[in-house]
Length: 136
Length: 176
Image (cartoon, rainbow over all chains, first blue to last red; front, side, top):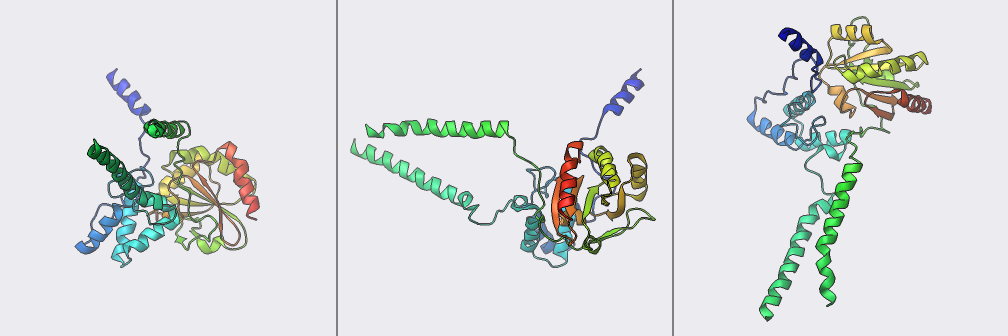
């Protein structure tokens, strides 16, 4: 009876994440031999968004596709390509969405300007308060 | 006092915030990632055959004057089974389908094609996912319509359902 139940439970279970049967890509989980290059690759991987588990960087993701992208980045860094050129290549494929380090452009300037504007607004409010207190 | 209106500003901001929340709840963001290559030439690649006895897929063969439907799929991908009948139907209409098999093994591919049908003219093996990323595709299955000069004209993300057929056929006809 127990075996039957177990069999039924196993038959009903589906894998949460469909992955292939092939082993991970060569440099998905292996560091580059040159520590300087590895540091460059790591820094880039921390700012590239995973396409499958959206909201994670590929450096943190266990998704197979993230592993393939890590391997691609490490291979290209090892071949002497600069991180910014790899980032630009990925942006041309997946749009600016793929980078966690958005470039300063007309579309993104509110993103960069908002903190400054909010601090200025806060100072303006604080100024009003201090003035009133001074008078009374 | 004329300054009284400022008391309402926080409430107003909160109502605007609630508006954003409600909008996000009722119309969730589209999480599909479109390829940035639509309207551009298909990048250079040359994939070996996915299984013995079948031609592989290289980009020069996609620039020879005829439109192409390129389907990115895998034997381990469940939605690919769902769209298999639709691909068969396209193939029966005389629309050639070129396959890119992502991270697949010849024996698994053979079993998949035997079970779910084989509409493919060519099958390229993208073992390390290099070409999928090169094309700006974020998952399987995805389908690209490429015109005769090798320019990507249309991308379909996810399984092709019955309802999507008209769209794919229209994109193919427009790419002629």
